[in-house]
Amino acid sequence: MRKLIKYKEKELVALMKEGEMTAFDELYYRYAPCVIGFAKSVFHNQDIAEESVQEVFVKLWEKRRDMDEALNFKSYLFTAVKHQVYNRIRRVKRTVALEEMAQPMYCENTGLEALEYKEFEQSTLELIDTLPRVQRQVFKLSRFEGISHKEIAEKLGVSVRTVEHHCYLATKFLKGQLLKQASVISLTLFSLIFFEQLNC
Image (tube, rainbow, N blue to C red; front, side, top):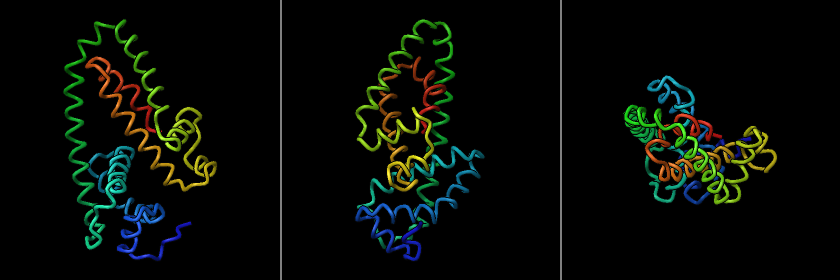
């Protein structure tokens, strides 16, 4: 149930700045469909569009204390999503270039690939154990036990949006840390295989 559905935008922004997750949820429910539609018009892919918008909302939550309550939140959000879309396009172009560069290397080093993948998998498990308790719990329930976000929310007594938030933060952290550890060979291999599975 949306407890703050009658609140005005500026009131919600003020509450979000104070750390009120329900205000953040309400802003997401109000504006996410519009900006997801915009992102989808660029990518023509629902999953990528939703992930791009999620990244923006996570950044908004992380930097909520710096937000100016006088700003038009909807306009600010669309601008942020537009920049996120352009940045993602640039990242995709760089990834494609890296894959083309690394392709001859890992085709000739099958044994090395297997060893690196095993080490990479072990590093992933160790990193998962370093996540904050709730993020770790949400990630494991979703990724390892295959439980839906709705079921996790009911199990933990939180909103589905809160589950999505923790899941995304966990995935973002793991990707960032694993990319730092991966070699050129494993970076291409894992970005194509393993990272796709990390989106819980």
